[in-house]
Image (cartoon, rainbow, N blue to C red; front, side, top):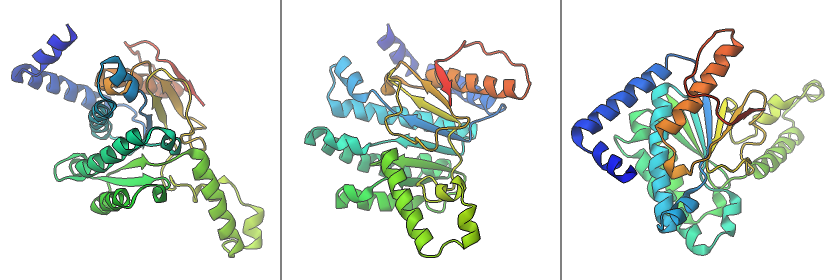
Length: 284
């Protein structure tokens, strides 16, 4: 039944109607409060591939298609920053074959996002790579540099691609940089006595970005896996979704966004009803 429905929705008149409905929903969503920063842990590509008897590479490729759809929703709705957990430093422990596949996909996908008429160009998105780029090969580093160069003058919104990244590594590097700045006379004696977390946050890879308002992890796993541990605090809503990333689309994303809006309106004393019921989420 699911495959039949997918086939029907590719029929031009129905596809046009589907796209029109989705566009109206996103426009309506943009009328309410919208998260400034959404963080995504895109989990479940491998398990989705195994479930559907696909090659691992196909699972990751389908995951990229899901990402493009979600990015379009975010930027159409007015989200300023999206941060994605594309590759953990821990992923280097996977098989060489899978790491090579992920690196090739990263190169292809980064360049695709930057092409004329694609997402970065269409929505004026600046792409930033956050992580230890020295851990990847020269050819991958060249693509990273090219993607950042191609989008450096875009100003409407930002896409942070964490690759390869862990929060512990980010904080370790930030502490080292902070110590060097202090030792080199970056602060007066009076300033040192009044230093707070704001100064430390200037050394983080996400410096200049607001903290995430909403963090979503797919696949039903309830952990952050060393992702934005410093930033995901205060008023970050964390939503764990029991679907694999390649299956995550507008109709899964929309209820999460609406529940976030309901919570924001409730905090402001504005009554609002959500027809989707409560999502499995936590506020830290």
